[in-house]
Length: 140
Image 1 (tube, rainbow, N blue to C red):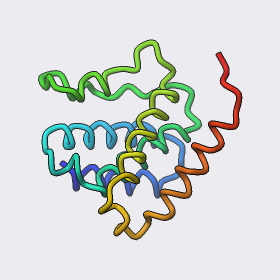
Image 2 (image 1 turned 30 degrees about the vertical axis):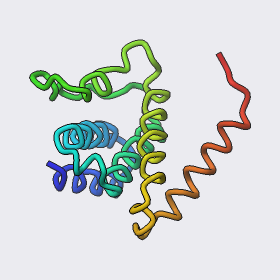
Image 3 (image 1 turned 135 degrees about the horizontal axis):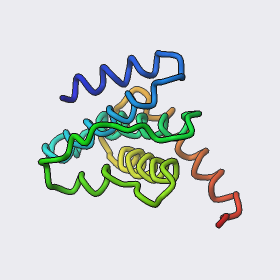
């Protein structure tokens, strides 16, 4: 599950941006499932980093509509369902932004994450985006 998700993420990120949003959304869904089913994965820096990378690319997408991804959670009733089955009334880019912020925030808080080769790159992107969002006036 995890290896297929990370492989799909790698392929999607190497592809031209047109039409990759469904693949990236699928990656995020499968990574959320894996994390919800295995506590070790929930504490894995690379999982949090990859999940944040998927959400970041959902946010960066130029597509106007969130893709319809098959409801793979139909028979799974756990905490993942309320995270993924949304965003319902919420703007999907705002929803994905919150998920990115959560994933990379958790990654950066892990002491073992500092051993990841791209820790500083993730931290720089995260800090830049967070600083930028604090400087912008909030809009309704």
